[in-house]
Length: 169
Image (cartoon, rainbow, N blue to C red; front, top):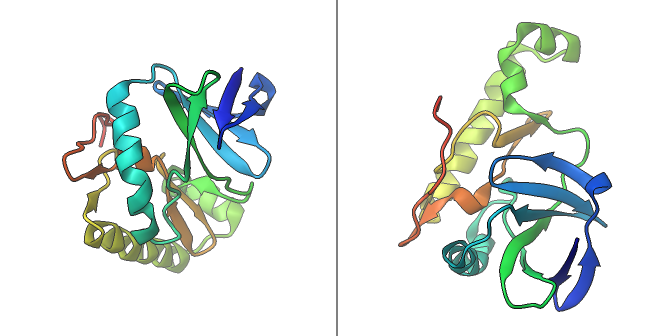
């Protein structure tokens, strides 16, 4: 699949898929992650364009879009590039399993530190005028005492609502 990043062609291959969900597929490309929407829309592209200048006000624990990805003709924004997480990060939902915590050697105090870290990050997100719209245990990653918020394109801000959600949350 061919796209444009910064006006230059890139090719994304199924062998480079990091994850795939209902609305998009995330690929590894060089030292970044590329999220490509299954069904890109003009409204989503408009929201992404409005979000990009606001990401400088977000803490580093927020893995926000950095640059838009366009179709191979350069006419339609179909996704974005963002920071690539290293392999040491895991979904926060794993912390709900005692067996996982024991095997990983994660104490209750460390879980507490992780959630205090997440609360601090969430407070900074709110101070930046944003709301984590699709807040669920798949959209927060952790490693040691650091929690990272992902799926930032679903954040609600200004006139742009969160259009997706996870029913259980």
